[in-house]
Image (cartoon, rainbow, N blue to C red; front, side, top):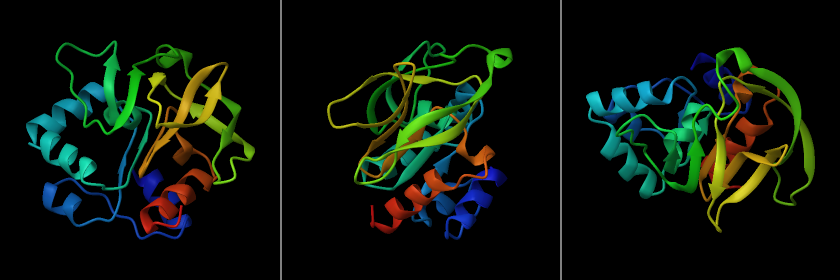
Length: 185
């Protein structure tokens, strides 16, 4: 999480880790980091955050999810653990561990469309046991693909990447999210 805090601060935001519902309710935007999606689901359930955070998302809280965070923002899940739930919010189906297991992790340059004018730009992406978007709804903007697999999406004030931009010095994705929180993008 500290990598996201660093990137958000580099993008001009004031950022702090949150763990409790009262802390989450006090922020203007939320980042759901990578990790293991079943662990995020179980922790959100154990700390009674699943339904309240889902409601905050439905009510318009800007949220960015990277890797497992993408899974947690998906309305539908492919290859989930038995009974696994997500916060939802993005009309998409996420496929867990789609790029393979931990040993299959990799880095490569991908092409993303981050601006309003949809110009393409190269971004060095770090994929760690990464998911992909198996299906995106009609109102979901696909911001990036890798070999035909959807790896970055935006749906209103929700942003998700299958990779970890916080592990690179490139702040463009965090800058986009900060502008989404401010309502300027």
